Image 1: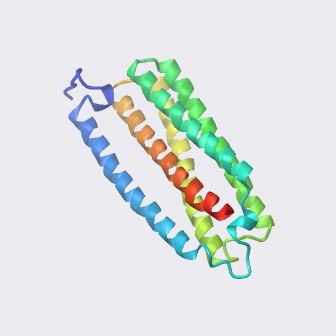
Image 2: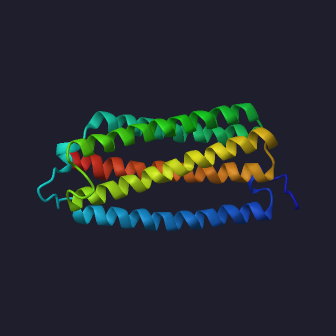
Image 3: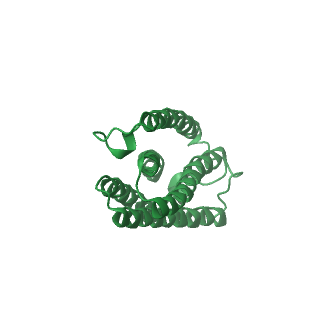
Length: 198
């Protein structure tokens, strides 16, 4: 494996560059997935039947808290990459732990939100609006859950191996995934919650 020391560690081999390119292509497929889910939601957002509309169930406080946690986690994820590029293993691991804890906090609030909706009679079967909402939010939440599990596995690898071309590449790709989830959340916050509260 030929290592180019003039490039950042995550790009330092041809294999690493190819993996990053491949992951960008994967994110293109993820964009198509979420674009489809948004299209379904926007088609069905006013099909509430006898169930509640968004303005009846959405509350701004948990949504703002979710947004704060996820956007802060994006910042700390950026600090993971900065620490990695300065070969500061302990700092990178600390910021990764903070990122994952913020992600878990986000998931906790989202689960609480879903339980509240169900207790208020807003279930997946209540209306087309609610089914599209639960599928969109649930798919994003599932992606965050997968990201937390991925981050835990990465944490173990960094702890045992430190930063080398392989772990640096995995860390960088993880950061692309995490930032992508934050961008999706900004769209959910803006076009689902804020629009629904109006």
